[in-house]
Amino acid sequence: MSRQYILLNSTSLIRQTQRSQRWYSTSTVEAPAAGGHLTSVASSQLLCSTRETALRTPGLAWTDEDGSSPVRSMVGGRETRKMNLYQAVRDALSIALAKDDTAVVFGEDVAFGGVFRCTMGLAEEFGRERVFNTPLTEQGIAGFGIGIASMGHTAIAEIQFADYIYPAFDQIVNEAAKYRYRAGGQFSIGGLTIRTPTMAVGHGGLYHSQSPEGFFIGASGLKIVIPRSPVQCKGLLLASIRDPNPVLFMEPKILYRSAVEQVPIDDFALPLSRAELLAPGSDLTLLSWGTPIYHCESAISILRSPPTSLEPLIPASLRSAKIELIDLRTILPWDVETVVESVKKTRRLVVVHEAGYTGGVGGEIAAEVQKRAFLRLEAPVKRVAGWE
Image (cartoon, rainbow, N blue to C red; front, side):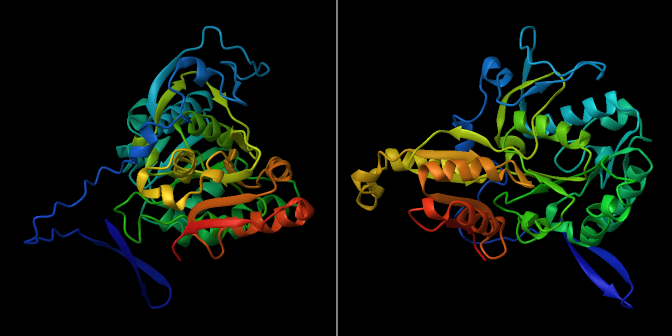
């Protein structure tokens, strides 16, 4: 459903729901399936298809059952289960609720399982006083989360679609991000995590396809995380929930069902603000996050072995280029050191993101890399972005 905001009396907002209409055509062309799948992900070599690869995910840190012992790196006796990305979200939320009595999950329709089923069964498992629905007010959801986090609770809020996060912009940027600074370090709302589905799904239109991470890039005090797969999602989400800073956790919605891999069933975390090197190279650094990671993987494969139709466009001398692929994972604060170190080695950088070119995160990355590695670059930083 698409939703519109109508301003009345310049003080109140009334939300209206537009019911979808079925349009009939005399054309014999069938409409594309609305399954929300990205077929290229199924064959991706970046996904953990076995127990061993999942348990040896770089940076993975196990957390003991009682949370009082130090982190362990053992993998013996650990088990995995096949999950897609929304199941990994649900698994992480279940662990957080089970281990933290102060944790609450709330948002529009979350008690019913949410529109993407990420909270399915949590209300029945942990009670409706800990997993509950809110009114349709993103500003209220963010403000409520700030309030209970300031009182010591672990607040896990859901904004149903990232496209609807704008009414909450003031609460997130002016309140949540600045809370510790405003309190002179005496208080914090580190227990606040705001989850939201992001990026395009292929049939979402203007209200269900946006990538708004760039709007928050200047909000010091806030962390922004975008995972690419179920293992990454579970580990990064648990790390975000337990991080001492408010975190905006943006989940690529087309990957909810498209990305499937073996995921450790135990409690673990992956490091925030640390990029992951997915494929080593020496000729060019390719940097991305979320869904476009898989487009980058496909592009590298096409470069090496182009189909007949593209052979005239790809000189043979370029097909042996060694591309270094990096998943940024945390968008704010991002891992400057890893990216710059890679660029100094490869001397070239291409940043790929689904958000628009102007004002996108790629512009900030390009500026910082050209400042730190200017004398090592052999070409300007290239940005590949969504349509304006």
